[in-house]
Image (cartoon, rainbow, N blue to C red):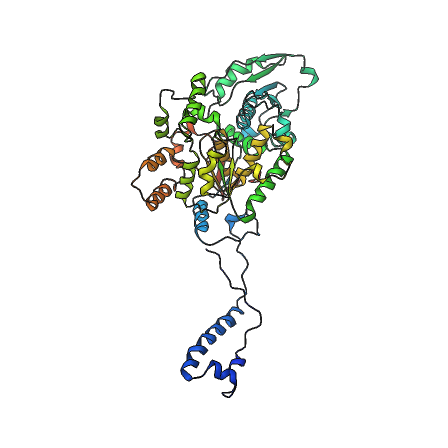
Length: 509
């Protein structure tokens, strides 16, 4: 229901007595020199007086507390006009589900041995998250004690952050205490024991493969060392292990309190005028190199990217025989700033909407963002929101900076990613799990076709864009092929259920 608007008036009703003096009074002669003029002048005053009198009987009502606005500060009063329509659309089709990770009886009573498992994780923050999740699952399958994962120094960004620099170690241990025993380091009795490096895990390795290849190596005289297993564990595991994945991803992996606090201060600054949209922009140089796409910044920029790609052909991640144009038409390219602007306009986002953009330095700098900034001037990132020196101590810590982006995007009313990736899929599932709001996954292949159609009017373009993004992902179609369900991106149906069913997991994180 749209908010009411009220006119502020004086508490004391206006009196018309001064205007109703005797016919001999001069003011009466001035205002009502004739019966005809009296009728013309007095009736409007009487109508205005009646309106004011009625308004005294209806004091302003308090703002209603919609169940969908529980993340919005109460000081915010929604505005009329297009912005209300956009947020109304954004709130539509958000499933009314709650976390539900009740384990089966055998899982709750599984034994934990005295065997230890060491894991080394690599990559950026969200790759590290994926590997930590899988490490916990593997430790559970093997009934091994898990040593807090070791972070390999990131060779791209030079980030030497450790697990404890980013995540709350004690919360991690406490949350998983009934599933996997986690220790900070190997006990003294095992420090000198031989570490057996596990054979490389193939893609789509399942529980049977893990037991067959690792159990024999994990005996009382050895410590199992596991590395290089990013995204290799099968998507489809037993129901209990799927639930464990969700528990690790959305509950156990909590960022350090000071990181949460700083990010939440950014959220408060973004929410000063109401809800906001979070946008994960994938415009960095390495993204354009790896995707084999054109950045939209002109021939000179495209040639610069092509030279890097030619010198390092291994960086092109897939479908290397396709041209940049063919890749774009197939929906394989990130949306650039101009395309994001057209998408937001088509979705009905008003010009004054506040947008938080996450991501690294765009290739092309300020020029790369200009098409978006010109249409949506309220565009902010962490550097824009931070107070002076607030980020100085961590500007060379990409993983911590990515954690700040993650939290702000998690708390936004709407989240949109310009391209897929680990962060986008993790946020999509995490936001669904805690009920943050709508996730918009651009239908890039269809969007490219629309953008190339010069015959469409603005109204037709808007209708088409809204139509192709109106429906949520059809979970029934996903269930037809459970082996491909990624519970980190789609926690339903394994980790969530309808509000009427029991749940032993809190939705807060």
